[in-house]
Length: 150
Image (cartoon, rainbow, N blue to C red; front, side):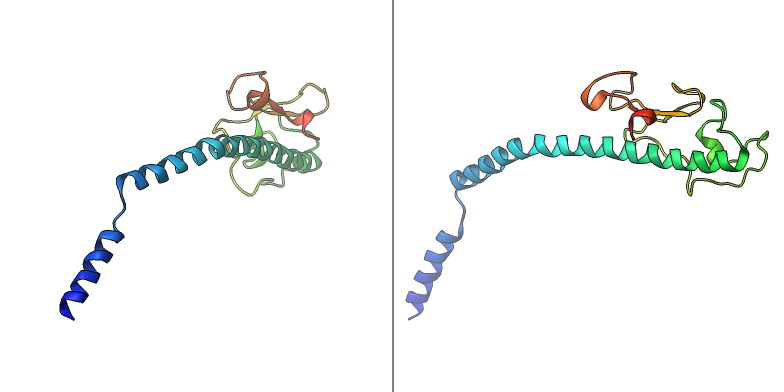
């Protein structure tokens, strides 16, 4: 009876191991799956950053309208978006802060560009320079502009 238990244990021990070939097959399958799914995930992440930049710009636009309603005009280019959090020295009737937190960076970690007047003389312009951080561009590198987020 003891020898029968030992034989069964030995057989189970041999069967419990994973061979090198089995391991290579599993690693190859995982690598193939990652090569197919990986690029799609990165593309989705890039699209999410563009959406986040548009959302932030829309939030700035709302805060800028509140600022203008209080003070009578938009912050100058020199005052920038910081005027939504910190009262400029020459602002009258400032009733801020108009943003709940400090002005965030764009999704690529760079400051938004703020201009007043912008392309339209009576409206401010807020721009994220996209993934490449350079003016212009196409696709993920394209500028995200407040006058084109509506």
